[in-house]
Length: 186
Length: 186
Image 1 (tube, rainbow over the protein chains, first blue to last red):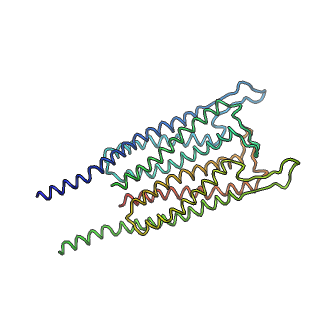
Image 2: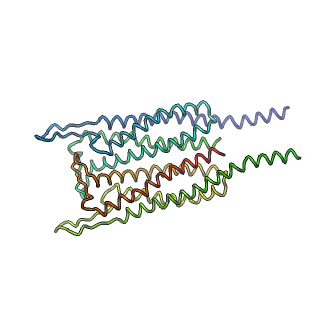
């Protein structure tokens, strides 16, 4: 009888710290998701609302710059928006992991979709980054001139909007790692 | 005595199929890594060796196109090469997982580095893809003209080299998912 009680005590002792660590990981997961939402939502809005019209115009052309002028920027806005919507939806699964800290199916589900979203968000952010670089520096070999001399406020805005997305990418990498560690600790 | 033998039998019966599935996953992991190596190595070589000189030249300029002319292409070659080296090194860990199918530390290690390499390779591939798109289509709003009319063989080569890298990205996503499933089955 006493031996049984001791054994039970040892077993629950062995389980309790593991569950506590997994709960801690789940809470960190939840907080990081909110950080990522702020980053991706901010960059989608910053890029999506950019609009600069130059103060001079010719008889035929009015010089305007919008994100839809460049397909890479459109893709960036779409990718950031999709990632934001996914991250908001994933908060529900993250809360479930906090409550039920020994869950495994929900963690595998999160790893799968986090990895896919990581790919999408990275693709959008780097496609836009390579165009932003071109807009700043231009390229003499291909005769593509820098447009940031004219559209300076547009350029500042699109450069800034990259930060949020790359922060989101970093957070998603950390989220996948946290889920993997939580899965292996079971 | 008989009860103990039965128990042992039941326990090994419960373990065997799990281990067999995990070994199958590890073998699939190994094969997919070789597929990814072929893709990333091929695209790094295809982009790195591209070099087109136009048959006409002026007194001052000789028209040449190389991957180093555009920073995004240089980044693409670097990212693909780093991913190739990593994938070759990771084959050793993959073989270890085939031999020792209940290993967990090595699987967590693979998930961590696979995720980071997924980010790097996706960034390189999409940065190059957005420039390739520009080279094909140009952009009237920013006065960036398509260069593929002149450098057609260069353009074909760089477009083709993207395929290997995006295939590598897809394989890396599948590899992360496989490791997550294997971890959760323990």
